[in-house]
Image (cartoon, rainbow, N blue to C red):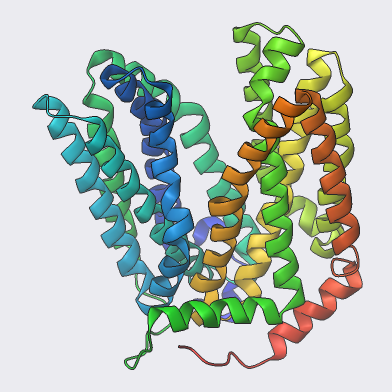
Amino acid sequence: MPTSPSAVNLPLSKYRNFNAVLGSAAVSSLGDGVRLAALPLLVVTITSDPVAVSGVAIANRLPWIFVALFSGAIADRYRRRTLIIVVDAARATVVLALAALIFLHADTLTMVYVVAVGLGIGETLFDSASQGFLPDLVPAEHLSRANSRLFTVRMVGSNFLGPTIGSWLFGISRMVPFIADSISFAVGSMLVGTVKNQETHQPQGKRKSLLHDVRAGISWLWRHPLIRSFAIVVTLVNFTQSASQSLLVLLAVDDLGISKNAYGLLLTAGGVGGFIGGMLSPRIGDRLGVPYILWPAIALTCPLFFVMAWTRQPVMLGAALASNAFLGILANVQMISLRQRLVPRNYLGRVGSVNQFLSFGLAIPIGALAAGLLAHWTSVRTVYLAAAVAVLVLSLGVMRQMRPAAIKQAIAEVENEPAGESY
């Protein structure tokens, strides 16, 4: 641990290195939100082809399928602080290059695709390294609070403030939002550079192949029932969330007759629910005990999907969306914190990347595709009924592994076993 036992009782705000990482996350996520709004706006100035426009989002997600597992292995090979600094500096350069192309009127759809793929690769490396870096900055007792604050600032930046600022900046000039995003990456990199190196994870000199490292990470995850259950839960939950979110506009606007402005309020309701879930997750975990909140948080999304499928009231739909987001972030913060606490330092990148590959690389695109096909063959509301049934089956399937007694036992077993092979 980066602190002595006597320092465990210090408030989280006293950990200078964590504050630097939190500031970096706040600035970078604001830039992410700016780019999230500006990139589609840039694309529609180049082409109006719907397939070409959606292709940018696909290009950005491709690295989660083809690169994420190797990114985790790389994160376990090198010092994570250094990797985070280099990746953010590289992303700043890539976005600045895009701004230069716009200035020179040389921006093409192909170049936008290349930038989207490059940023996606950087995101997989950054996420793998940062999740493994956090346990070296704060004691295990503060991990849930630290993750809660990181989730909160990222949500505010990328979901609330950033997109609004990005749209406004794009109205001034097409290249301005990308210059701002580049600056945010550079500032984030510099803030992480102020962190004093405290990594307990030490890269080893003699290494085997990246493919061997990936297999070792998958093997470690599969041998540990609790961590394996977390991966299955997050994957299937993301599948259902992607399915429901991808068709929300049809449910709200076409089925319920909600105006486009009111549809924005529905999205805001979900964001507010997630924000509150992130803020309160540590307190609820401390009050009730983490083993007692994980399974209920998952299972309670089942009736919420039934509400979405059956309600004819926009207010009820908004309440269900907010509650769904609240429960999702509540459970996610706790699962990530437990994973950081239980997985050996030299496996954190790889185990985390398996979760990324499954939950982001596979679950999200497949969920959206499955939802579209099911709605085409039946109806939009059938998708929400199917999501409810899927969560019900998932809840019953992991009930045994996620009982409080089973979680406590699994925690004890993982904490008492040797770290095992590094590479």
